[in-house]
View (spheres, rainbow, N blue to C red):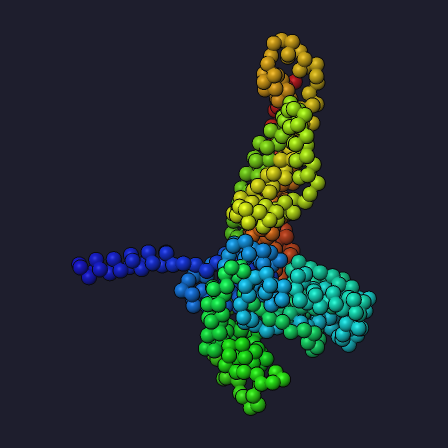
Length: 506
């Protein structure tokens, strides 16, 4: 009995310790796909990839548990500086500008920029000079993009930038591009997926992947550097890279140099006759990857969860927009000259600037003053933006009520509040109902923009889905169907309410 009680106490203590285990929050973009970070085909709620496993090794070395945070690739630097997570790792390239702005780890993978062309053009477009006047695509914000800008000046090529590394290769196959310059591991994956393409043997530039931390987090960066060196020396990184089929002789040499196991002599050569360590065994996959149909079925719960986020965010933002819109419209109709000027300025500024810019300002620009959670920033951004549009609808509806009715109500002794609540307000609401519903449907679709500030809503989850199965057809159809399911009942309800309201007021 005592032994059983002791075991229960120990088990309870272990559970408390496990629950209280600190986490290492790290950011990446699952839309980039394998081999960096992708949704696990067996459970789309989880992620996998070589960056995922490297992050888990870092967390293990720190005595923590790795926790993934989804963020757009272009926003990783801003998000880590803001404090959304402690380290960003998703094919983040080592650049002087990044090292100046953030605390970067030692490089943990070496890649090469390679040119990919259609098979029939392999001998035609073998270098930048032969691509003069032709379109070459790449991912924006990368060293490949900088290299192409240089080639644009020197060789006269036409640079086409993308926000992801999937569509450039599809456009290359379709003839919209003549070549793509990107990392060799991205190119190798894309050639297998798309088909009809060939990677040219020329290495146009060498780069390295690093983890990035905020500038004030240098102490944690130094601890992570020691963990990475240890994992290089004991072969853990080699095992991970072999598992994801991104290992090469050059990679082994790079890791040995970076870890301090070897030291290059003058000129950059290794000591002659120094052999590479024996290859480490690779753990085979535990199960065969699921079929396309099974993978689609497993993604549906993730899309439904993202749909819930979309509809909750849209409803709350619309409620905020309606409340503020009524106040702004009332202020512009009944307020003083000064208040009307202030409210008019607000409406014009908000309507005259993109909602995407407003989201960036709320989330990143104000982070030094107030650090809003991503969902709250998204709610405020959409609500404040649509409040300006709603206020114009309500103001127009209020001013559309015939003045004769208002004067008649005042003649009968109604106060201004009674005139508003009994005469003007109900008629204005009926006039505003249809355009207000239209705005709600528009807001529902505009909610897709909040993915830039780490909120994974329906459109972002669909993009991750499409990247991982290599096609937009089925994910796009499912996404469109879900948006219709969310918006059509709302439009129908508004139509019924409008008809009943019209009958009641006639």
